[in-house]
Image 1 (tube, rainbow, N blue to C red):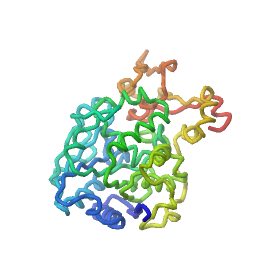
Image 2 (image 1 turned 90 degrees about the vertical axis):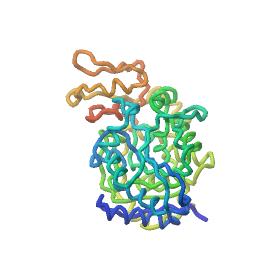
Image 3 (image 1 turned 45 degrees about the horizontal axis):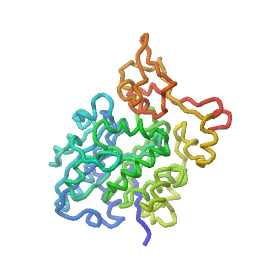
Image 4 (image 1 turned 60 degrees about the vertical axis):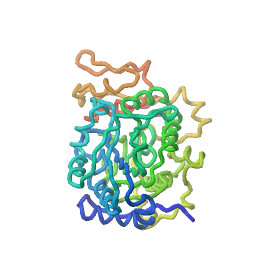
Length: 372
């Protein structure tokens, strides 16, 4: 049998419309009971990157999460909702403001769901993951469909990075700053904590220099669902105008036998893929480098550089980039934000943390000349 991934239209975040679309998406791949045992304890993890309102398009929309909760309540599950937000601004240690502004607190109060914090951890090899994975029987992931400067796509597999406990995310960025090394860590996490069901909020997606304020919102009007997050990401890559293996997390996961990346082996249910694959997504500035063969990339590595640049005219000097930088090489000097490029590892955590889209990506001259 082919792996099933559903694609269902949903033009906006009207609660009834979202519930109808999410219900249909899950039903097309077998129904909620095919993935979660009735009466079980379930951890629901949205993508809550930062403390921002739902209309920003940065976090998973609360109505998509509410719809997933309703499906689980329909089979009498005990539901817990949590995520590990971005590490800047103290959000990793105190996510209350993130839950409040994202609309998750309101949804959980109205639906009788317990909000949890990922403050307790258990080591799983190279990283600590929240102990809520141990305390629940099933795990449902509800990511946002966005581009990402480091991984090109953040969705099914990348959403699991939020399971890493507290500020250790910064440590992983510091240790595994090369994109291909970071991808391996993400797939390690996926291997440890594969969700039983993934439901993607693609109603309002993000393209360009995502996943935060520097990205551009795109009204896509779609909900996706699947039991294999790798297969879901493969379908999303086609919607973006890419091949599945252009997404390095997909390539790595398939090579390890953790999911399906061949579109021919995926049964797309609902909308026809050809009809929803229209205008290709605008990709992050550095994305072409990620798609080069490793042998070519190794040969040209010393000449191809992408690095963060602060737009001083847009910057409000909030200090988010200073706080999040794993290398601690960003400072405030003479009323300006300054980056010590001799020690910069181009992880782009600063860009992700910036609430004002004041950090852009600049290419080296050689990268410009060869069109990367």
